[in-house]
Length: 275
Image 1 (spheres, rainbow, N blue to C red):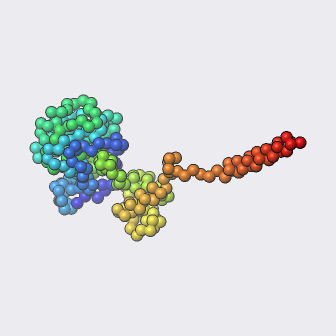
Image 2: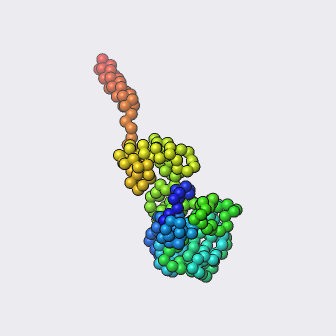
Image 3: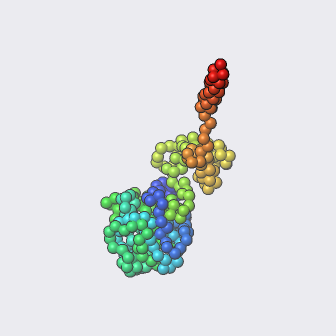
């Protein structure tokens, strides 16, 4: 079970090239873990809360790293199953990050509150996953927030999916309604400006699906996203290094006339010299 309106939560941005936060483990994560039901695999009306983060797959004992330069806000914070968490604010002051599921006592070996560069060791993973959350950084955000099933998403909560995809060197997906609306607008199908996904948005999505040769379901699915992304790539203006130079026919014409004039002038000069 997943929170029905998970696309309303905006994406975390942060460092455009974050480091994968697990030293020994190759990038692997559950893209659907954000906004999934808790307890795990709960049925409708049985979910007590929604997951506010993404689970990064690892081995117990893996080294956990800062994906970008941060200010460490707190270490050895109590977490579930007798594990701990580290709280940090990115150096630009934009994001509040939560790294949870650490082995108690491991963070104190490496960090204390204060500035820390990208790649700093912040502890060891206790189990087979590292829990990662992202929030808007402000003076109200001092810890993680519990997202209860009966409540709307916390106001400062951000979806960490695109952030983690960049860290994994993957192309970020279009997940939030804002991203989807922007993609439709760039294709020439402008939807509503903001707010909940509305009838206007559905109609524009159906028009885009018709244009792309897809069934007009009005639903944003994987095939629709793949077609939209391919179309947007084709619309992108090539960079100067890859763009074919445009032929300047006017210039060529002037050069031609200039060449003819030069030849005529040379012939006249030769004739004059022979006189």
